[in-house]
Length: 430
Image 1 (spheres, one colour):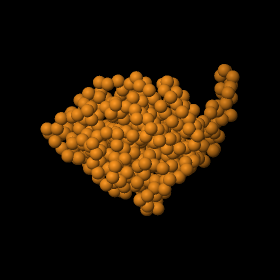
Image 2 (tube, one colour; image 1 turned 90 degrees about the vertical axis):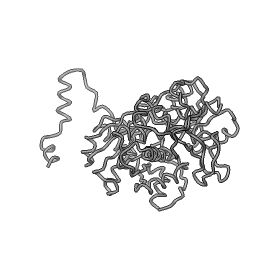
Image 3 (cartoon, rainbow, N blue to C red; image 1 turned 120 degrees about the vertical axis):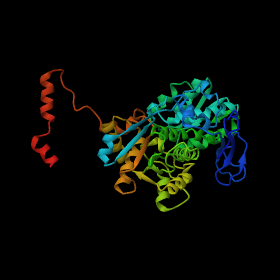
Image 4 (cartoon, rainbow, N blue to C red; image 1 turned 180 degrees about the vertical axis):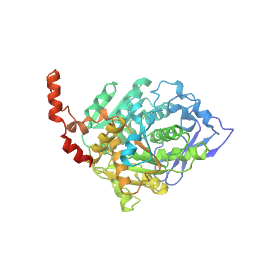
């Protein structure tokens, strides 16, 4: 990244090229998601102008306040889009006390238009797809991305095509189909749907698969989580952050956001320890980290955290790079642990997280217990979506105590029957 006071934005803003993350080969901006030299993944490069905090703060309360740091045209905020972002950063003091921490924050992505962080990445992908002349917005998805693509396409007035594993949560099926696009269930896992999407992307020249042929732009949308965290903390970086890992792009781009802000002199502090969180039934990156490997071995997913169920994560090796470089780690937790964490977050802070958010908190607890996270450090965890999308994970554990008649006598009888005996309560407090 270089700084220039004379550069003027183009239809991709201050983005200048696509560069290979493996060999460094440079390509013109376009739909080149794989390097022509080594087939490595491509990433957006920029020639950024000087920016001040005031420049950013003058922008709208959505991701387009950071438009100068994204590969989008300068007037992107004026186009029909879902205007995602500027979600709450919630100080979780009660949860912090429960965990023995000094300062804990939850970046709560439920406030996005389709209730997950995927609205951010889709908004940037849609902007790029429009500039590149694509007519259809498409994706393979574990559910949240399907919701976001269908909604964004509807808002933009174009067609959407979404491929999902046949066994994803019913709430996510309904939350996609309601927008009127084409929703196709694929037998098998997300990785099977992704393979089909890659084949279709090669065949359908006017289809933009947001996480395939316009992936370099799409992935940049996750930077806005990092930008917001830093700004909402008073233009400072957290000392440590825990991010759920599916493809791994969210974690990698949050780190990129922190580095860009530091490079522009916009934040206090220049480093943040980054930790990745996976569910044990689909934890190839955590396994590679623990074994000290640089290569991530694909697995077949088997977890209730379906939004994280990507057995062959595209950014897995880069997650390893980031966590090792920053002094972080990647860890896994069981389905039981993540469900317990969902309940803990809800009961202490009133935040109903989806299973990915439960994984973030469960990994935080695990790493604290292992001494790998500093309880005195300013810490952020990501809740990437809404628990209403993953009701099946917690529904078996939650129900009314019982049904009673609508009378004071019946209520009093229930209170008496369910009251904890005084002796037992005192024993529990001892």
